Image (cartoon, rainbow, N blue to C red):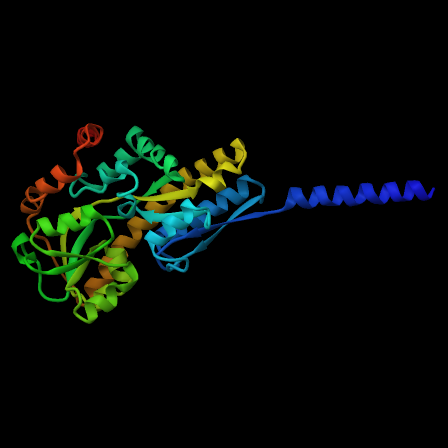
Length: 325
């Protein structure tokens, strides 16, 4: 009788452990430099909801917004080493690591936002996502980063010539540095979180970004002149640490990848609305928006393409992107 009681107790304890293991939840940590409520932040939250629902709660996602885990260059290294599981990051900081990311980061490579979406949603986009894996990250999906334009604290930019000698912050990307220099301005690589004080103190004259960033980072308070030259329409990317990915079953990997794809429409819906809202906010607050002729900007980009697109594979990628209608 005593033997049976011990056996029953042991069986119950083992069953309890199995139930506990089956119901254990893995929380995936995700980084974003943007503030809470920003379209990319909300899209990753939505992605997390889909993952939680489709894995029956075995996985969930916690989003650390506002650069809580570091600026983008730092968080890329963290995700590659498996310190964090997920990262929503701009394409630019990947340029030095993954050659394929340089092409969608080129100035004026996309004719419009619609052209960019068509390219990145198709075969070319999948090809670029696949290029991440050998570098310790899994490319899941592309989000919109809008059209980036110059803004500054000094004067309205009516033409390319107005940029001469001005100092603009760029993210840490050789393409971005060379683009600004090709326009006759001076590029200053700087973490995103330092831009406001950099403009306020005169270390830089301005920066370049989209309307939502210009608005939510409060850069419009210190740089009242926004030039709609739209030199870059760079997609952003949601990636996962390969070390995290490799621990998942093929079924869960498929769930994660599909959830990421399904979050793209949500992000674009939020993005389009936020872009309109932010433009209205900065205009109401007194920002001057100019629309210079883009053609001289485009013509100045020849040296940038010559320097950064030397590999035949990348040249072919450029031509294939241009051919997408």
